[in-house]
Image 1 (cartoon, rainbow, N blue to C red):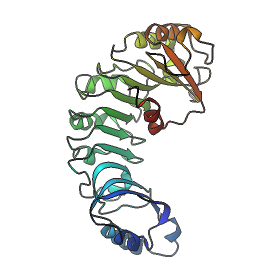
Image 2 (cartoon, helix red, strand yellow; image 1 turned 180 degrees about the vertical axis):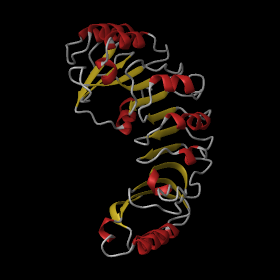
Image 3 (spheres, rainbow, N blue to C red; image 1 turned 90 degrees about the horizontal axis):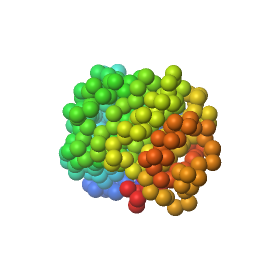
Image 4 (cartoon, rainbow, N blue to C red; image 1 turned 45 degrees about the vertical axis):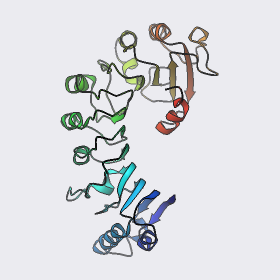
Length: 312
């Protein structure tokens, strides 16, 4: 494992060139050019980026690269897990994309900040089981490409919507969700106000942001009806709320589970920890057995996986 946080690219090529060329286990880079902008021209910076790219290993098992200022014309072929900012592999000026970094064995792909990842979605391998688009906003025009990227083995999906509504998702994806999908996160950037989306019948763990829906006219009844009609497969429901369920600001997470989780109260022991509308609580109590309330929530998918990995 090798981790470099907030490093300049100057001289980094010498470090990368010393690594094994094939099969390096884990490489984590956070790069920027801020310390170079006053000392080097754009052309010189581009030359250093190209030199860094050429010095990287040919392949790694797991790669994480974060940068808002650097486009790399080449990254290693990644055989297991890739986490990357879109700016690193898609040149914002020319829209040129780095040669395909996805090996046919890749299982986990996390795309961070940046424009819609249409070029990369067209290259997803059939081996992929987890796809996360975090703060990579999808527009309505991106949904057909997303639909075509759904693969038979895809079990976990995290999406960010650029103002997408439930109607947008239902119209494009209702009959197109991956058949193996069990974990779905629709908590970022979606405008679930007038209605809430239909959930695929295979999903066991669902993450949603309901603050906007609860704030809307008739929101209590709409959310309660939506909970009642969730598919029978649902085991865990994670809901981002606010402390009064009426503000658009999020600072509370309510998690409910079908079975009793260690240390969690049962639904009948509800103690008004959250000012939840009565109709919504009644709908939840009819479907789930225990609950947990967290404040000052960190939306961290890895933490969520650690919490429920054995149970799910």
